[in-house]
Image 1 (cartoon, rainbow, N blue to C red):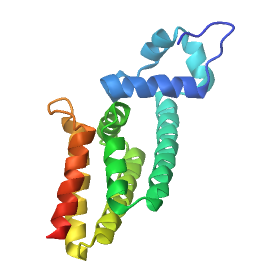
Image 2 (image 1 turned 30 degrees about the vertical axis):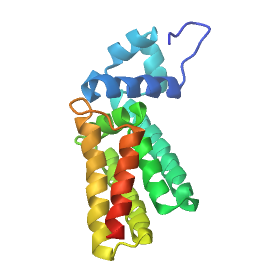
Image 3 (image 1 turned 45 degrees about the vertical axis):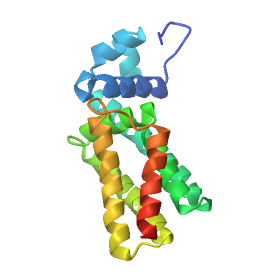
Amino acid sequence: MGGSASTRLSVDDWTERALALLMSEGVAAIKVNRLCRDLGVTKGSFYWHFADVDALMSALAERWCAETRSALVGLEELHHLPALERIRAMALRLVDDHSWSVERALRDWARTDARVAAVIAQTDEFIFELVQAALLELGYDATGARLRAGLLVYAGIGFAHGQAALAKPTPDDIDDLMDLIAGDVAR
C-alpha cells in the first residue's frame, strides 16, 4: 500500500502495516522510518495520526484486543455444535496460517507489553474453559477434563511457537486427535 496526496492513510492502515511487520519480523521492526518507507509516505503522515511509536503500539494493541474479543465471541457461538466438533473447530482455527503467525508474534510482544500479556492470559483462560466444558460434556470427570484441557491448550500454544520446526497438523490429523479424545472417554 502506498500513500499519495490523493490517498490518505487511516489509523487502520498504519496498524495493519505494523501488525504485518510484527508478524514477519517482530516488535523491533516497528519503526517510524520503516513504516513510512513501506507505506510510501513522509513522517508527517505518521505524526498526523500518532504522537510517537508508543501511541501506534497502543493503537495496535487496541486493534488486536478488539479482534481477539470478536474471535472469542465467534468461539462462544460454537456452543450449538457437539462437544468434539467445538474442539475440532477451535483446533482448525489455530492451524490457519494467519492465526498461528499472529499468535506467535503477539505472544512474543506480550513479553514486553503488560496490556497484551493480560489479553493473552484472558484469552488462554477463556479457551481453556471452553475446551474443559466440552470435555466435561463428553463424559470426563472434572480432573480428567481439566488435565486434558490443559494439555490441549498448551499444545496449541506450543504449536504457535514451534510451527517453523514441526509439521503443520492437517485436518486429518485433527480428526485423528478428536478420535483419540473420543476413544479415551469411551474406555
